Amino acid sequence: MTSFVLASLVLLALLLALALRPLWRGARRSALVLALALGVGTAGLYAMLGSPDALDPAQVKAPETLEEAIAQLEHRLAEEPGSVEGWVLLGRSRAAQGDWAGAAEALGKAQALLPEEPDLMVELADARMRAAPGGRFPADAVALLQRAVALRPDHQRALFYLGAQQLQSGQAAQAAETWGRLLPLVDQATAAALRPQLDTAREQAGLPPLEVEPALASGPTLAITVDLAPQLAGKVAPGDTLYVFARTLEGGLPVAVKRLPVADFPLTVTLSDADGLMPAQKLSAQARVRLMARISRSGDAGAAPGDLEAEGLELDVADGGEATLVIAKVLQ
Image 1 (cartoon, one colour):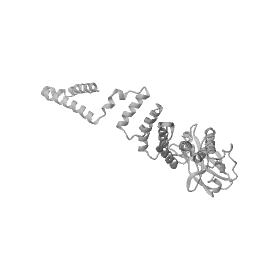
Image 2 (cartoon, rainbow, N blue to C red):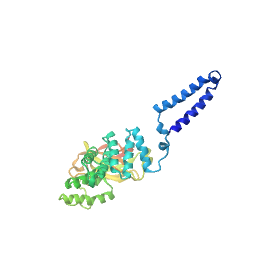
Image 3 (cartoon, rainbow, N blue to C red):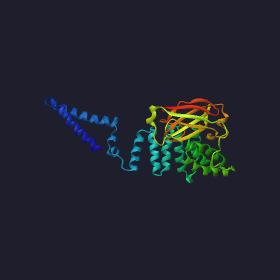
Image 4 (cartoon, rainbow, N blue to C red):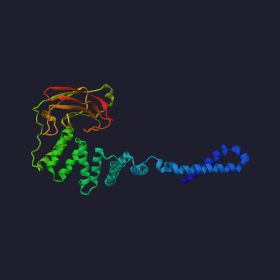
C-alpha cells in the first residue's frame, strides 16, 4: 500500500512539472516547492477522507474461496455496520461453514436492525437452536418463534419449528394444535411428511390420529374464479403458488384457504369447511367473508414484496355463492 502511494506521488510530481513548466524559467525553486506541496497535500487529504483500503489488492480481487469472501464481507461490515443485507449474508455464509454460533451472532445483528421481520426471526431462531447444546431451542429462540407467529399467523417455518419445540418440551397438545394449523397451508408432499409427526403429537396428547382423508364439507360451498391481469402475465414463474383465502370481516386467520400450484388463468376453486384451519372457526359459521387471492413467489402464505395480489372483496356465505378475483397488483 505504501509503495502504491509513493508511486502515485512520483507520477503526480511529473505531471505537475509539465503543467508548471512555464514557471521554471523564472522561479524554479518556487515551482518545485509548489509541486511537492500539492502532491503531499493530495495524499494527506486522501488518507483522511478517502478509502485507502479500497486500493488494497486484497480487498479488490474477487474471492476464490468462501473464507476469502467472508473475510471481505467482514471488512465491509466493519465500515458499514448498519447493512441488514450484509449481516444476513454473513450469517448464511457462516451457516454454510457449519459455524452456527457465528451465524447466530451475525443474524442477531441483522435482527436488531430489523426487529419486526418474521422471516429474520425464524432464521435467527433456527441458528440459535443449532448452536445450542443438544439441539434444543433456547428460550430466546422460542420467544422469536412465538413473536413471528403472532406477527404472521400463517408463517409455515415458524409454525413448524414452534410445533417441534413444543413436542420437544413435552407440550404434545400444543404441538398438535400448532401443526394442525400448519397442515392446510402446505403442499401435498409436505403434508404427507408432516402427518406422521402430527399423529405422534396427537398420540402423546391422548388424541386420535387424523383421518386419512379430510371429511367432506356439509356446509355451504363458494365458487371463486381467479383471473390474472394481462399486464402481469410475464411476472408469473414456474413454481409460484396460488393462495385463495376467505377471512372474517374482522381479519385474523383465514376460515378457509386453498393452496395450489399456479396454472392457466382463469381458474375456479371452491372453498368450504373442508378448507378450514381451525375447527372452532368455520366458513359455514360466517354470514359474510372477505375473499383474497395471492400468487406467492416463496411458496409461503404470508404476503411478501414481489408477490402478486388481487383486490379483496366481500361475499355473503351461501351455498353456490360465486365471486371473481382479478390479480392485478404487485406488492411493494
